[in-house]
Length: 167
Image (cartoon, rainbow, N blue to C red; front, side, top):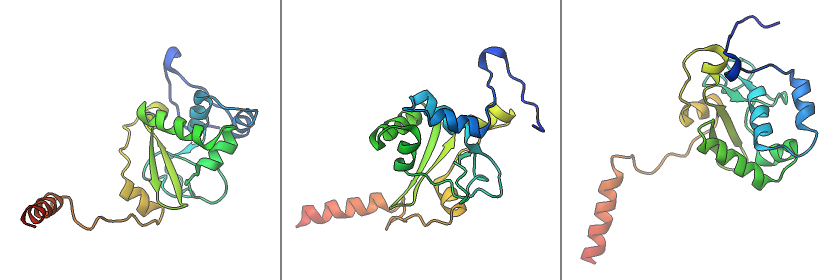
């Protein structure tokens, strides 16, 4: 039973599916871009103490029991019945359309997917900007830091050019 009320107009509304029904629909075969987006929406959680990074923003969590929202393209490819390259195209397109934010981490850690406009659509509250550093801290991952801060970079570049000219 839902403990909140989120009214919406008929033409811009949404409906609820149980997670088991949604998973069954997704596993029927090759998912379209719309099917993939629906899957992401259905599997999004916010402020769940059992899911790392959900306090930072509405994150996609496939309920695998780990509490980690990090996903790999291979996992999504198998889930959606498409290739890893197609998953990459889907994700890039959803980012370009400003539907999601993807926070990727080096190596085999994976990617955390955050839905944009989720909070305003589902709960009629202001949406949150997702910051990679906050996500990294929430997921207990390290983010590589550049050798120079942003303010030092132009000075270093000018110095390198000057050295090239002089030599």
